[in-house]
Image (cartoon, rainbow, N blue to C red):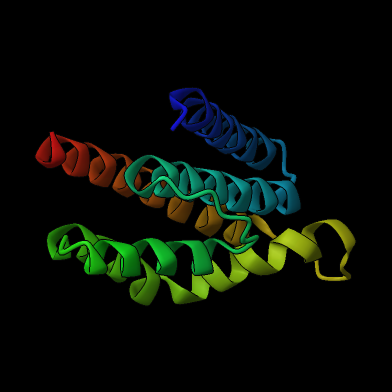
Length: 143
């Protein structure tokens, strides 16, 4: 397993979050939502790779988080799966908005507004913080 791949995914995820915040500050709420979605996707893929050695090509933050949650449960890591489950169930509306933005923010007729951009960035930050914590706890207990 390559630590380079994991590091590259995290680096990209963090850059997408920075772009989301920049887009938001410039009034580009479509970009803020799209880049927030990308940040979540890449961070989830990084964690799935580091913890379980799997490379996934799922273009959906909600599906990636559900996969991570399920794999953590299967690995007997209920304490780590629960925060992911809380995000998936507690922020389903925002995750759906993020998923829509993957297509709509580039090709669709729907325009995102300030409240959408803010919600997307807030959820992305929460997800990335949670994934960093899970990754740390998982690797700490597995060593």
